Image: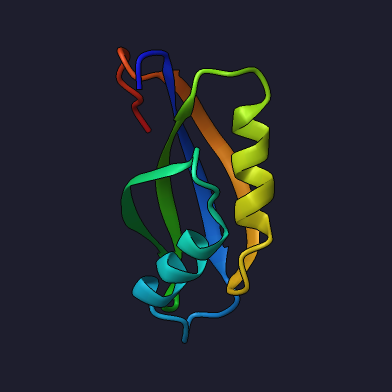
Length: 95
């Protein structure tokens, strides 16, 4: 994508018993065609609970980061999500 955003979203599963692969599959089902999954990383919290940090590439259009967050919030196995960072693809996002 020529002018693209990298949108990073921190997601929480509905419980520690939900495997990260299932949570990611759930998230992928709600992404639209303009939201392209790039990568994900498990972030351990405590007592088996984790957050899944998901990177999505979108067109560099105003409002797209909010649309990504809203879409992910509707995923069946997601109980909470938070927009962590937005960056142009030419930049590097550090967390």
